[in-house]
Each structure stands twice: as structure tokens, then as C-alpha cells.
Length: 131
Image (tube, rainbow, N blue to C red):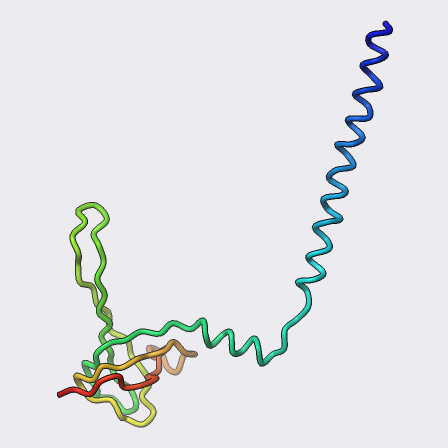
């Protein structure tokens, strides 16, 4: 019996230390949360949002609409199984405020708020004029 009595007190303190550890961990977790709750100024949030917008470079393929151009974005991808390089392209409707871009121009477009049903991109700059 003396062996069992000596074992019981040793197991009880271990159990209490195990219970104390998660409580300490939750206290430590709570401290960083309060630090992350501090809000950044609205201007800083807006500028970081603009930097996260997608930017693509492509060629204007149609300018028949008013203040809208179709831009073809070409990209190369590798086939997952056969490893052959394939050319893929898609066309984006981009907003051209000044009707400046012409067919064949290389332009840089940036993602923006929806302007119409299909337009979610706007022309940032004309990189190269068609020859």
C-alpha cells in the first residue's frame, strides 16, 4: 500500500500542472490579440488595397466601343502531365477614359471596381504604340 500511496501524490501534481499549462497558454494568446486590434488609418488601408490589385500587360485587339477596349492577355503554361509549354490567352474588357489606345498597342491594365457588366479593368498606361 505504501507504494500506491507514493504513486498517487506524484500523479496528482502532474495533473494539476497539466491543467495549469493550457490556462497559461490562453493568457499568452490573449495578449497578441489585443495588440492586433489596433486599427490602421483609413488612408493606409486604401493605399495597401490599391497595391494588391492585379496588373496585366496585353495587346489591344478591338477598339470599336466608346471608352472600352478589348485587351488580349497571353500567358504560357506547362501541361501538368506532358510538360509541354502551351500558349493560353483571354480577353479583358478595359476602360479607356480618353479613347487613347488603338488596335495593336501594348497596354498595362489594372483591376478595378466593376464599371459595367463586363468591365472590371482599366488602362493604366500605353506601354508601346503599334507600328
